[in-house]
Amino acid sequence: MAERVPFRCIGVKEADALLKDPRTVTLDVRDAGAYGASHVEGARNITFSGLSELIVGTPKAAPVLIYCYHGHASREFAQTLSDFGFKDVYSLDGGYEAWQSWEHANAPTGTPDATLAGWLTGLGFPAEGINATVDNGMTPLMKAAREGLGEIVDRLIALGAALDQRNADGNTALWLACVGDHLDIITALAKAGIDIDNCNDNGATSLMYASSAGKADVVARLLELGADPLPETLDGFSALDLAATEACLLLLRKAAKAAKAGLAPA
Image 1 (spheres, one colour):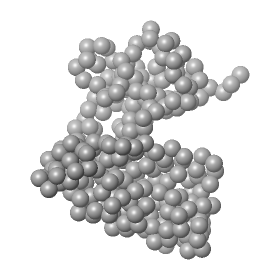
Image 2 (cartoon, rainbow, N blue to C red; image 1 turned 180 degrees about the horizontal axis):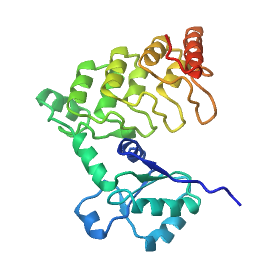
Image 3 (cartoon, rainbow, N blue to C red; image 1 turned 120 degrees about the horizontal axis):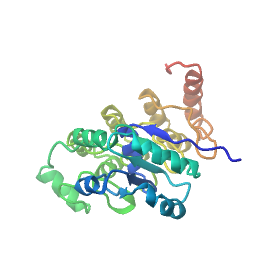
């Protein structure tokens, strides 16, 4: 008999990261009236009677996020899907009530001024769309980070731009800042609270990318900011395994040794 895959209960921050993954199937298991009044964007309203159709028509490898009112009924649905072989099933702790509170607290806190609005529209974003996306799921923050536009990055952060929004490859603005070797922007994003160890669709972190590209200065900065050197890609390679230069190798060897010993790298 195949081993049952358990579901996990997660908080709103982890749920937000899941919602940015286009593969995620989001289920609202509240009553139709509550769903009609307000729901998570992209969520599908479903009851137990509708589960059979979902189970048959949904790939078992697709991540599934389920929420109810307060986080109790969603566990029953999650357990059922888990029993039917779904690999990545999540129940939202606190339910929609917790999500609404978190979403309100993390909503954009201001409106772009004329200069920023002009920059946004020039790239095809709405004038107030600080979290809007264009080709490949790119956001304004990702564009500014890639181009090294530190002032715009700072202004977007101040306006409440979503830090952990992922593009179609599963990368955040931090990865794009690393691509451009923009150390100050890497620091600004990390200090603002971006997930420094975000894994993209291949299981790769920004540290792994920087290591594989031989970007020793970027590797050093990420490690200073607390990046974990131990995670591995889907193929089982760590940042140390991927080191393309001796400088990266030495930095990561020291950091990995310290991490395995439970110490912070010096």
